[in-house]
Every structure is written in C-alpha cells, then in structure tokens.
Length: 117
Image (tube, rainbow, N blue to C red):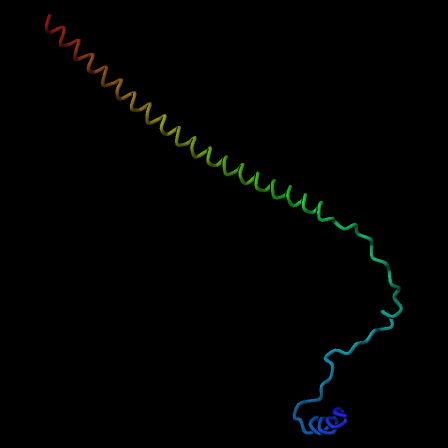
C-alpha cells in the first residue's frame, strides 16, 4: 500500500529533478569469447599449516636475530680491540720514556760516583 502511494510522487520527482537519471556506471556484459571459454580447474595447492608456518617463521626470525647479534658483537669486538691496541701503544711509549729517564739517572749516578772517588 505504501509503495503504491509513494510511486506517483517518486515518478514526479524523477521527472522534475535536474539530476540525470540513475544508470549503472558499468553494465554487466559478457562477450561471446568469454561465454565460449571452458572453465579450467585451478591447480590444487597444498596449504601451509599453522605449525609449519610457525616453525618457518621462528627459524627465520631466529636466524635473522642471530645474524644481527653476530654482526653487532663482531663490531663491538673490533672497537674494543682498537681501543686495547691504542692503550698498548700508549703503555709502550710510557715505558720507553721511563726507561730513558732511568738510563739518564743511572748515567748521572755513575758520574757522581766517579767524581767522589
């Protein structure tokens, strides 16, 4: 009943409306070529189970984390090795200075002893 009452007013609205009539933007059509095509079955894919996918993800993540850790530790080892080498060279230079100083003191002591005699 309500549809019969609304139908004349809707028609009148459509006729007086400044908007173009509504049409589907792309009608459904199929060509003869598509109608003649035979449906082929898609290849059957074996689904990856949740367990296998989880194991693969775990192994991949562990490998990537291990590789990242390895390279981080390798870089830290190189830095600490360079620092240690610098410290060794600094220590060697200090020992050489002390050795030279002690040698000068010994020479001065010998010179003083010779003067006393």
